Length: 329
Image 1 (cartoon, rainbow, N blue to C red):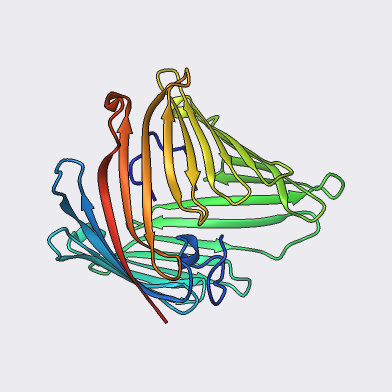
Image 2 (cartoon, rainbow, N blue to C red):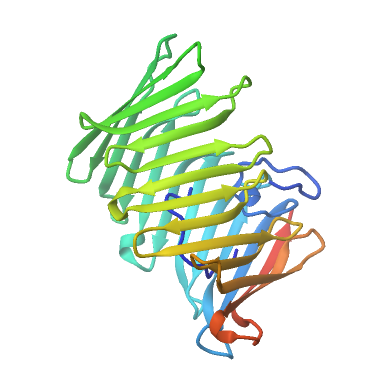
């Protein structure tokens, strides 16, 4: 992933593999790893302020045979351990994550519980000393032909309780689903969803009580267009995603700022360029990435470059380097 970019989009929330097919929801699949990857060691060097490069830390991650994340180690630039996270899970279900860090307030133990349908019925978060920091409880009563009601309770470490209630109803004639959520008795979210005959969502509109909203439409060719409005800053964001779920354009527009970003990808689906433009279409800056691969098609070296209008005819400047050692089952 290119590390440098202009303004990030508001609210922003597969490819074929060599050998055995991975579940699409595994962490390895999400980051584009191919084959039966066991471990990945990534070492980073920052060239932004030093042409010789400065160590920028490293990570070491361990996956099971299905690509699900089991452990993650993060190291400081000098090689000392910064944090270690362990996952207790069964396939996609994560029951517990435990993080220990050199920074005390990053120490966390997070647990989840599930019902027979795989829905999260509760979560608990503890600090490094074992003190309860937050707790949620979700209830999912049986569905009726008319509507579905679910509720959630969240408590912080001081016992302060917040309650949310969600009611979902699908119109049998139009097929439109409406989901309304109240928080502590006050309107919070209103969500309308239109599905095609197969039940796949094709348009939806999510509206918040402060005037913020998110509207989304799936075009016949699989392209997704979204319009998001963030009321606190009066910012509109327009995003286009292609049929392979890759962002191809993002526009952020507010009273005092405007930024358009366009994205390009290689044949492996890796991001190779972000180009940023002003309101008049003038190119302001670009971020580019170049990769070297191993025999399985996983990148083992990534170089990130930066160019802006002040460079003129000069070539882009190397700003970041990542090297990976990938092992396989």
